[in-house]
Amino acid sequence: MVVQDKVAVITGAASGIGRKTACRYAEHGASVVVADVDAEGGAETVERISDDGGEATFVETDVTDPTEVRTAIETAVDEYGDLDVLFNNAGIEGSLNELAEWDDEAIEPVIDVNLKGVFYGLKYGIEAMLATGGGSIINTSSVGAATGINGRSMYCATKAGVNGLTRTAAVEYAEDDIRVNSVLPGTTDTPMIRRSDQERDTDRLQLNTSDAMEGRGQPRHLADAVLFLGSDLSARVTGVELPVDGGFLAGP
Ligand SMILES: NC(=O)c1ccc[n+]([C@@H]2O[C@H](COP(=O)([O-])OP(=O)(O)OC[C@H]3O[C@@H](n4cnc5c(N)ncnc54)[C@H](O)[C@@H]3O)[C@@H](O)[C@H]2O)c1
Image: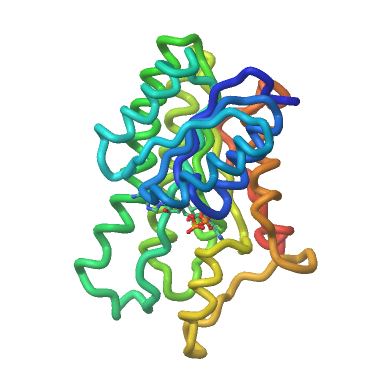
């Protein structure tokens, strides 16, 4: 029970990595605010947690809207009295096209969700944690922040931007007992990657990342890394970019 009695807000918690992390936090004794634009999926995450005897609330949240992000964070403080952990995890893959083939207007949604969404989470999460006495913020980046992924130029650019936000926030707020870290998932078996697998229908757009370890990463691998970073087990860890990629980035 490494996050017993902690309060966590998790964005993108209606599916994939976010949902698994929400369930894992609840199993380990945390109260969880499930924040997502998908109301049906969010309700299902809460139901799964409640069925297992855990505590969770859904707040419909579009992370591209700063007011909605602030409301999700305020819900944690209002309903559960604190904000210990914020997992800025919501993200979209955007278009799958070689760079010169991207429509200009396809750039915006990727920046809005993946980069501005994390910025708003940091801004209002830090504001709340300054008032409640510190905490841990984890942002979902990607191995795409450190390597090029065929067809995903803007995705990779926004995830590199997430690491820039992570490092800056970590140094700015270390003295306030606010830790800020990124996780870099490798290919992880979620609805996002399954959509992506189906879209990659030409040779030039084939996925060019591959784990050194056998098989594909599972949401629970990310959930456990985020559990560590949100718990006191990582009390001296801040500003890191933690790959959870089965050794992909360590390779050639
Ligand atoms: N699956 C992978 O292989 C992989 C690899 C690297 C990084 N990631 C990152 O992991 C994170 C989670 O992805 P996943 O694989 O679980 O995908 P997913 O599609 O299963 O889940 C993403 C969730 O984010 C939510 N979301 C999308 N836009 C939103 C918005 N504007 N506001 C609030 N919520 C929104 C979706 O509704 C969904 O519930 C993302 O940031 C993604 O970029 C995933």
